[in-house]
Length: 440
Image 1: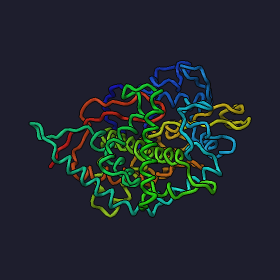
Image 2: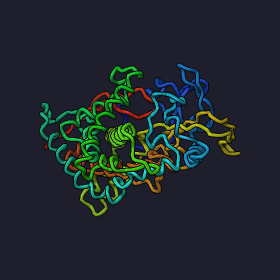
Image 3: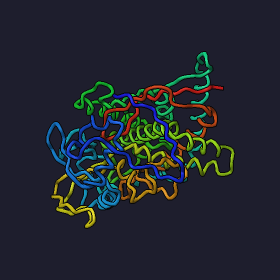
Image 4: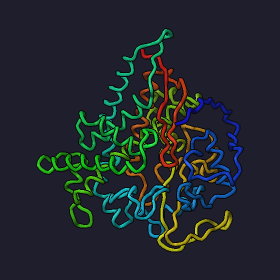
């Protein structure tokens, strides 16, 4: 984990925010190296790659295994939309190899259509826009309880309360919401959050990567036990949907239920947590945008501003940094202008969403954080295709409600101390974000 400085950006609106620059050269950049991602100038590193080598190969430091890296929006979208040529079945992280035990098991994230489509349909009705709107009061109650707890924090001599935003907000809210949706009892929720955090950020907990499957198996076992209780006592939660669902006209096997349960808990918890953490950090770094959000409180367009702001937070933070595919046949990626490469059957292709979300071909003034950005067809939930994030609407709503109510309750909340980030090139994790605020 590395401390990161807290910057403030105030660029006049009549000026474009310049593309950042790095002192690294192209031959010093290997996106497979997690230590590279601890740098404060990663936007500049990715900009250099995107403009000079938009399609090139990186290689894992430990194995020497190569993969193709894509950093432009159009190239990534082309791969995302073609699941016939670019398959997910061998895992979705750059480190995953065919047959790798660390790849996700038989869940929809590592399925291709048509099987993926059937698996997604199994739980889709828990994440429809209508269902997510129906969850809003429950999210509101969770946010209100969280804010009340923040009000009870002791104050210093200057009247400020202090807390770790990650621990008391970003971890707490999405975990509670997805656990409620899964039907996990309140008494077990903290344990489940701990397990998911350890499985997704083992380095931060001093855990060797080989131990991750054991943690995953514990989550699966819990999910299976919960599912078995739903056989006799069915409810309306997502776990009941797994018990009663079918894929390819067959009920889910016990190991499939456990793995499916784990996927939903992980995806519903960790990515929204990252978005919330980066949202707080970014609003502190861009005070003019924070003021625009605060100025909308109580206005007729408050909800529109919050929804737009949450979309921009996801673009800016890219909670999932990359996803990987394997070519099912020889293929060509690229375009005549930027160059085309021939990808051989079986080769890995890694799509760097965080680079695509700063592509000036897709976004005007891409290095400006703009809560009213329009249009904003960002790629933080994926760039389309069969694997577009199932919980996108839920994540948007959680971020919009949380940030709006925090700014309403604590207008002066601000980052106050060193920021710690996980050393990861897969998930954009902030592990510590100290903030201060006036609690009254």
